Image (tube, rainbow, N blue to C red; front, side, top):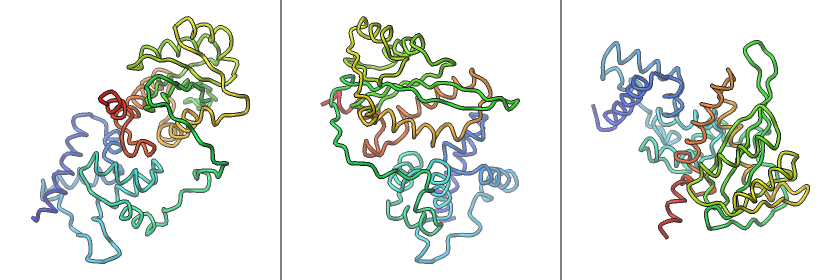
Length: 301
């Protein structure tokens, strides 16, 4: 067994070990960027033949058109199909979490070969008028708050509507998320209390749209907490652009992958997603770093 095969076997053993430790195959597949079919194929091979069963029986052919190993190509395609990552983010993700070095151009070649170099029409970024945004460099100076409307169906097929309240720090992209049954000022106030407790820095300003949930009671509660509350200009969602963009990420990378069971389950999954977003998810706008890595950088400079 050559060095390349040894590395491949060690990686597969880590995947199988992760599944045993967590007891959750789906979570393991999401974490390692593989399909369930691949996981079970590796599991069967290991049970039948031990480590030797994990050696690729069909090595990558010596073909100039194929520039990465089959197992790496599979990860690239999985991340593209399931999370709609761009080539840069796929490259960063593979290096950070799998120790696999694949250039951005190498990722693009794989995507192009499989006809996935362009996202589906409904997932492409719309061409909008270029707007210059001024980022605050101090954590907590500006925190954008907004609400994402959620539509589910329960086990009986009945429509369920929930509301995700979201806060995002302008300087670091650190977020706080919480789901509610109702869309009102009482829940907006409860959410702000959660944000103040959750964020690891003092908040100077809260910025919202003019929605009914952010009116007088909410406004004066924010002011009583020692923060400013500022409304964006009407019909100017770009002024809260970061929170709006983060909701698109929620839809692509979280909500399309879960099934609504009940509110307790939703709360647990949302809490897990919030932690992943802040501590592990690599952000294109942050040049491949996580929000908490940006916070650490800003606090040490």
